[in-house]
Length: 456
Image (cartoon, rainbow, N blue to C red; front, side, top):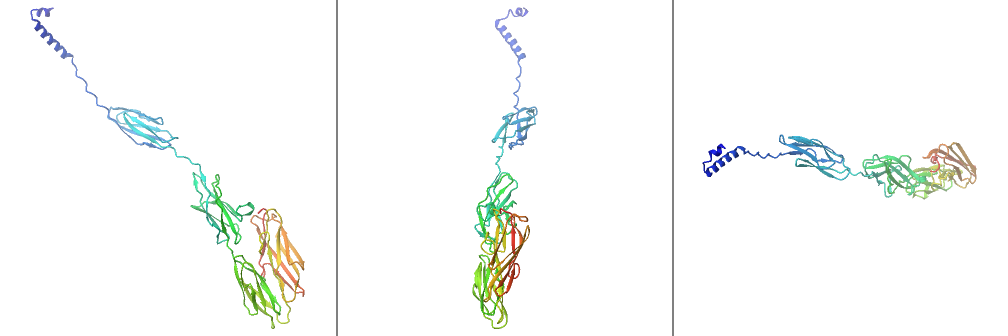
């Protein structure tokens, strides 16, 4: 009211100016200054582990941020979990765990306020079942002639996969390529594996001379057993030993002849030569394997005399009567085991796959010198098998004597235990002269019988 009165005499323009001034003053009293825009939070991070094996594990990520700057950490995959430090402010550490992996290679992203760390996890290693391959035969192969009757056989170690543990080998040697149980000559299990090759040396007994053998091998760890290797061959050497019979010859004063038998391996060569003028080698001056040497003895018109022959490295003594003396006898014998071989042998083996008796054959090679003739052969055979045994035979036709026995009795073994065989032969001529030969004495080699269990 007062203002109105105060301004009633004024002009409208003046009133308007005053109103504008009052409004301007009022506006200045209510105006405010706007707040400044905040600076964004900068977060840096570093992971100490970003790659993991299939077994998983744990890791940490270092976070660097200004004081008061808040951040959060999240995992983008279920196999990675944040175990500590899922959020923070300023500097800090994020702990995380990676679960075991049973599948393919996988990745996960851990994000910390816009910064991403990639976690990579490997797939588990593939598991291959263990295997053992057949070993490869190295030596001897291809029918090679070995230098011993107890050879060493060598294989390349069997190839394996996976964890097979300790590997051992079985070696088999046979005279037959099908390796039937009854003919298996040698077999050995549990031969320890060598570094690159594995070897086995025959130690149980010697193999036969000049014989072709087949052999093979296989490997095992006790649970897995490989197939047998391919079959290879080798030949044993011909160990040259010579036996001559007789080693003494008694001759009458008249001219005469004599024959000496040579027993040797099939590949063994020998020669025969006289060392005295009254003795002449008429045939068999050389030979290979078994053979005979024919000798001519000149007539003697003087005193008794003695000369020698060298046959297969052995000495044969010839004793000739003086003029007017009677002729003598030459006594000798040899043994055969026809179940095993057709040539003379120094051992007869009581062995059989069926248990049938084995027959040993003694053959006289005795002869008379001059006009006399042998009219009687007396044999005595002695050996021990269960009990001591003595066998005898006598008669004008007993130039051969046989005896039999059976495998598998008391004291027999798988290896064939050896027992001495004592054989004595006494011959008598029509003039009443006698001469005797015994195994293991003079020119007669020692003889044995070998006692096997049946089925070998």
